[in-house]
Length: 119
Image (tube, rainbow, N blue to C red; front, side, top):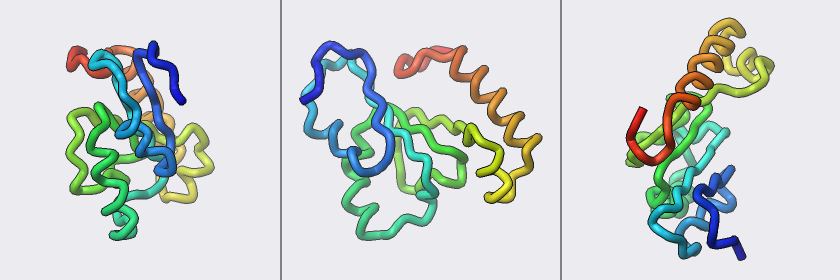
């Protein structure tokens, strides 16, 4: 289904979240779950189904801190704001603030090696 020789898998959205659970991969391979939707107050039944699968990931990426479910316990969590400031206007976040977040997030990602704990 998926090649064996990748160093990193990034799974986007809840629908394919269980791939990490079912994919046998080497310990050097890192898995990141990217969630762009508001999951701060998820449907309990759906979150109950997804939670065990997402807990297996090495890291998670959310659009903003408020979107991280309170019971998610993953070692590395990164917050990257939306690429479009239109989404920020709808969510009540000012465009200048969103641009500032994007610059900080980009700098942070450029300076870190995912999964090693080193900056």
